[in-house]
Length: 257
Image 1 (spheres, one colour):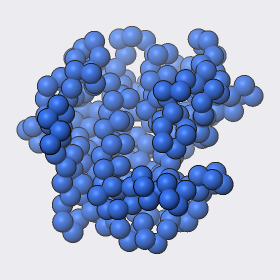
Image 2 (cartoon, helix red, strand yellow):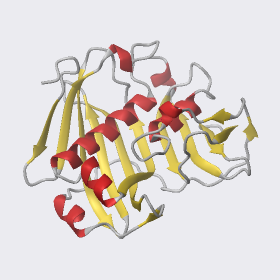
Image 3 (cartoon, helix red, strand yellow):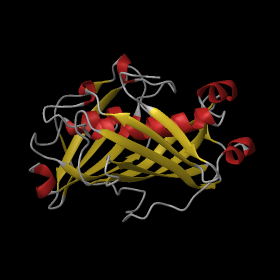
Image 4 (tube, helix red, strand yellow):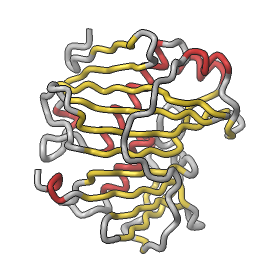
């Protein structure tokens, strides 16, 4: 039992649905005693990783066969941000596999079973040694059961390129941004992007598309554009090609909380 985090996990038999119940810790919160966007993505990454571990196709399996699930894109709609001390339930399930793509839904509920975050994601099954997508191994597809996709307004997976102004200094990737795939962890791109946004801005919707994985020591150049309904951020290499593109849609009611 992990008492500090008060985490319990369970899978719903015959549905492919997996749930992690956890208490929001102080170390996960910012100045408003709330979990930020990168922390929400951490929850989503954790719950699907725990599901894979429980099915026997987790980190050890991936390391043995030099494969990994790499996040291609995701969209999260935030009704409200989790707050310090509350117990939340983070749930995930795959809804489709096709070629080298895996498709997965997420939701976060509070203690009253109210949905506070809903998300959709697209993953690519990768050969890490060859650094290229490969067809999903049959034993992996067989390990999972699919359930219907979460109902939510879904935007296009790909985010169109946009004109933007380069802002801030270049960012050299530190060692603590790197995860087990030897790439920058998905949540760290969100952290870098949030630093460019106005301090009072609160996103009610975020979209992210990952073009190319950055590794330790690489240098990224941040670009920012403002639109009527959103901020757009891209983190690019020295030649201007993006590693990650993100859009942050605001909500005045959410920002006031």
